[in-house]
Length: 373
Image (tube, rainbow, N blue to C red; front, side, top):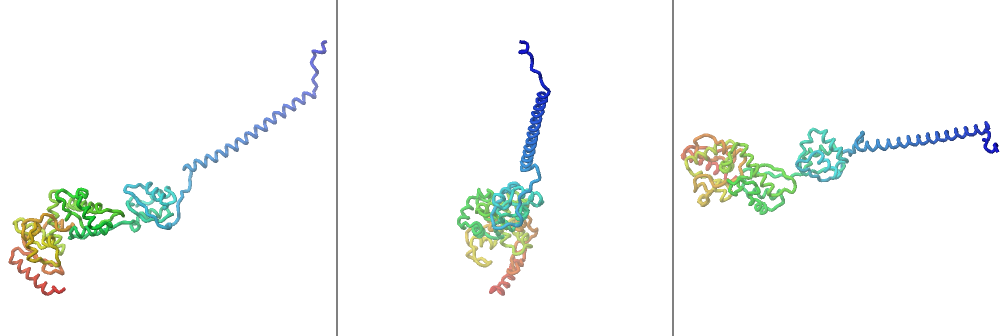
């Protein structure tokens, strides 16, 4: 009975077998642990590489900026708006296919110290230009599409309206219609709705699509700027322009402007009629420099042979030299002047009517010899 409860004797061979099995199991576990660790390291390395490349794409590393080479090909029109920043210009050029990337243009823009002088406007550009070439082209006025108008001194509204019509592709009638809205043009109240004399003669540049109102308002604002620059108070703007317009139409040489202005003011001070042919020509345009008895008899407040004082408004567009003469006339006692040589513009002055008649005789003699020319 006791043998039934006694343990079976353990042999040396069975113990060795168990130890061997345990060592195999431990070795197997170590092997798979090493394999798992190696796989983990590989995965970690791959993940790090992907992350590195990802952060590089975000600008974390030195990534080459896309840029075209050369001056491009083909033509495209781009519009640079007033106040555009370098980044906004870059986006405009990129959207038009001019530059390869906004980053390339911004870098070229920042590298060029003249970039800040890029003007708003319409530009002819090439597609696929290098960013540096695009900056240089925007700085070159030859690539800017502009509409230019030049209006000369001494002309009347009719001439200016035709010039504006030619510039804007509107008709002269449409220009005249736009001129009626003087409030939109910024015409001062003292002009009483009369644009004559308020369209400053100069050369102007506009973008394509410019309207008559754009041109007219620019010319009016330029006149105001010139008056302000020369120290004319607002209450004297209209009178200054009237005198300046008379000087503009009468003076043949720059040196005569201030002298003629002096004659005008001397006559006004004495309440003498100005008796200027230029004012008669304004109401009765005709060929030549002389006026007829019939023309000088026309009943109009512009006729300075019939009415004393200044005409009610300017008779032409005066330039700045004539405006300055009206502001600062020559100080003298002359009451008369006459141009004695219509080719050279030589003008003589007189204090008395008798002296003036002698000068007029010189004009008549000159005219008798040169009238055929």
